[in-house]
Length: 560
Image 1 (spheres, rainbow, N blue to C red):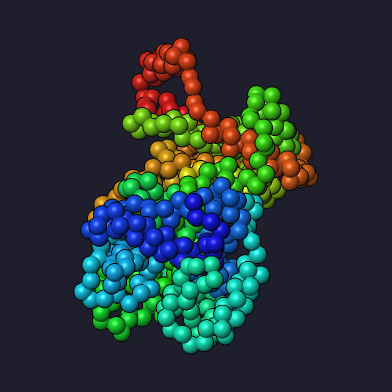
Image 2: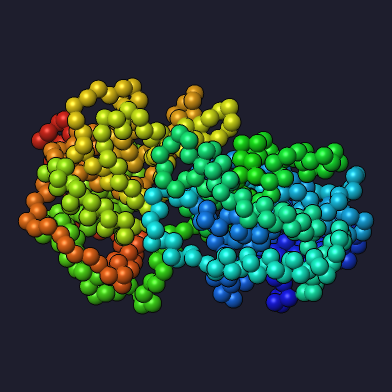
C-alpha cells in the first residue's frame, strides 16, 4: 500500500507514473527485461486501486473538487476532479501509445492526451485503447441533487495551488526538465509547468469556453442546462458496462488547454497520428477532457445527502408514506383519490418487458384542469415533484411547441455525432405535460411526428432515435403525468382520474420531511417485485374473460 506521500488530488499523474515505473521495473527484474509491460494492456497495475482506496476507504472523496460550468476556469489542469453527467453520445474507442521505452526505462502515457515525455523514434511501444463518451449535465436535474456532491471550495483550493506553483517556479527558475517534488513523484513540464500568462488565461477563459460549448451543444435542442459538456475517456472497461443515457460520476484527471486545439508542429509526435476525428467536433479549447480513474453509476439514493442510518422496516416505511400522502392530499386541494393515484404514479417504474407489453409503468392523466387551476395546482404540483425526484421537467403543450420542438434525438452522419433531443432522458425521469394551453390549430409534419413520438413513449416506453437511414428504438423508463381539461387524445395514459379539489393549497414542507420522502420514494422503487403464482393466475383469468366479452381488446388495452 502506497503511503500519503502521493498528492493524489493535486498531482494524480505523478502517482500514476511512479506506480507504473516501479511496477514495470519489478516486472523487468522478474522477466529478465523481456517486455515487462505487455501484461498491463487493458489492466490496472495498481494506480486505480490506489485512487479507489483513497476515495472510498480513506474518505478522500470530499477532498476532490466537482467540475461544473461555474468553476471550469478555476480548476487547475492535470488535477483530480469529479464530474457527474449523462452519457449523451458514445464515440467509440480511441487508440493511443500506452507505454514506451525511454532508454532503459518504461514510461506510460495513460490518463493523458499527449505524451508528457519526449518519445524516441523509433522505440519499443505498446498500443492501447480507451473508450470515449460525450457527457452533459443530466437533463432536468433538480437543484437539490447538487447538495450531495458539493465538494471542497474550489476558489480557495485553486488559489492555494496557484500560490504553491508560483513559489515553486521562483525556486526552480527556468528549468525545462521534469520537476521532482519533495514527496518523490514527478511532474511533467510540458503539461503542469506553464507560464504565468497561461495560468491567467485558463482562469479567465471560463466565460469564453461556456459560450462556445453552449453554441455547440445547445443550438438546436431544448434541454435545460446542457451548455456544459465533457469528453470522458475511460480505460480498462469491458464493453457494455456503460450505456447511452446512463448518469455516472467520473473521477479522474482533468485536462484543458486551448493550445491543444491547434495541431502540433512536431512531426515526430506519434500520439498525434492516433487522435480520433472526434477532437475536431469537440475541440479541447471548448470541451474539457477527463481521463477517468474511477467511475460509478448513480442511483436516486446517491443524491440523498442525509439518508437514514436505519434499515427500511415496514413500520418506518408506513409512517413516511402516510406523511407523504397527507402532504400530497393537501397540495391537491384535499382530493384524496388524486393523491393516492399520484403516489402510486411516483412509485411506479418499468419492471419488465414482455414483447410489446411494459410491466410496471403507470402514466397518469388528471382531468378537470383549466388554465386557472393549472396555474395554481399545476404549479404547486410541479414544484413538489421537483423537490422529490432527481430529474423532472414540466412541458407546456401547445400547437406551436409540437410544431417546433426537437423531441427526437438524431445522428448527424457528417460529424458522426448524436444530436440530442428533448426525449433523450436519463432513466427515472419525470415529465409533466400541461395540455391546458392547447387550442385548435394545424399540425405540421414535424408536429405529427412529435405527437407520434410522445404517444409511443407513453404506450411502449421507447423513443425512436433517427439515424437518417433507419430508426432505432431506445428503451427508457420515464414517469408521465398529464394535466388536461378532458381525457387527453395525444397522450393516452394508463390511468385517467378526475381532479376535484375542495381547497387551495398554502403549505410547504420542511427540509427533513423532504429528505425522508425522497428516501422513501427511492427505496420503495428499488425494491424487487415479487408476485405469488396465484395472483398471476387470477390476472390471466380476468384477461381471458375480458377478451371473451370484448374481441376488440388488445395487448395495449389489457396492459393498462
